[in-house]
Each structure stands twice: as C-alpha cells, then as structure tokens.
Image 1 (spheres, one colour):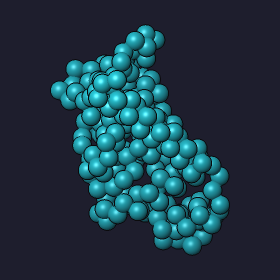
Image 2 (cartoon, helix red, strand yellow):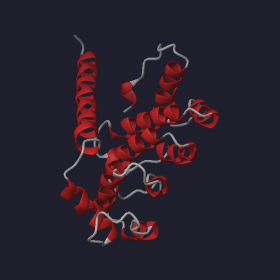
Image 3 (cartoon, helix red, strand yellow):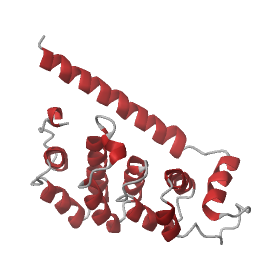
Image 4 (cartoon, one colour):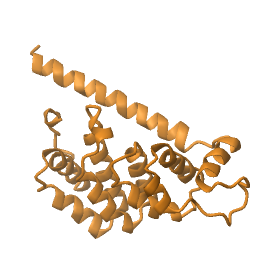
Length: 201
C-alpha cells in the first residue's frame, strides 16, 4: 500500500470522526432541551436582564456584539438561537456575524441558517464561504467542512437564487470551493458521481 493511499485513508478517517463529532454536538448540545438555568444564563449575558420569562425583552444590540468582538458572547447567541427558534431577530444577527473574522461559531451558524431555510440567507452564506477565517484554518478540515455546510445550507434553501449560487461557484478560482460545489451539483442533479479531491486541503 502506497504512502499516498495511507494518507488518503487517514484523512478520510479523521474527516469521518470529525463529522460524527459535529453531528453529536448538534444533536445533544444545540438541539436538545437545555436546562432552564443554562438557557437563562445565556439569555442574561445577552440581555443584561434577570427575568428570562419576559418575551418583550430584546437581545443585546447587534452593533454592540460587533463592537465587543467577544467570541464567547457569540456562542451565547447561538445557544439562545437554538433554544428560542421563533426569534427572527437572531437570523439578522447571524447574517452579519457569519462573515466576521474573530469568533468560533461559523459551523453552528451555517447549520442554523440551513435549518431556517430563509431566502435572505443566500447572500451571507455565499459571501461567508468565499472568505478565510483563522479559526477554521487552524485545523486541517475546518475550511472545507464550513464550505460544505454553506453549500448544503444553500441547497436546503432551494430557491433559484440559492441553486444558481452553487452553480456559479463551481467556477470559483478557489479550488476547494470549486471542488465542493461540483460535488453539491452532482447531488442536486441526483447523479452522485463526483468524487471530491481531498488532496486540495
């Protein structure tokens, strides 16, 4: 067995384990019913408010979140987002934060926008996947996984604009984006015949 083959198998195993871990986090951390005190804690940090049950209270202003550049605060926001799925204000915040370079919540945001399937998410997702973030670049498959998730979110949205965005990005100058979007198109067209080139990572 050649070194290249062993390297490819190793990358495949690592990638598979990482995807399993992400799915576990989504299922048991973000989508599970959290203890009310945990929800309250995240909500209070965002609102500076002690009464969790008053729905009239609004989130911390977006301008303040952007100004603070506090990655922990963004994680609190995503905890709140998954706990309060009917709060549409969060979607607008996520649309702006997903293109910011200083936090750690890119993958959670892509999953969140995928679940919401809002047509207005198309442009933020398209913009976000064409950027490079230090946090995602810090581990081997981070950037590719995020691009894949953004592509899947666009497919889930399913509008003509979303699908056309995927097709446009098959001609991207970025080889990873091009590779992932060609794979996504093969799924959209139900061909499932495109093999991604993981050597591009």
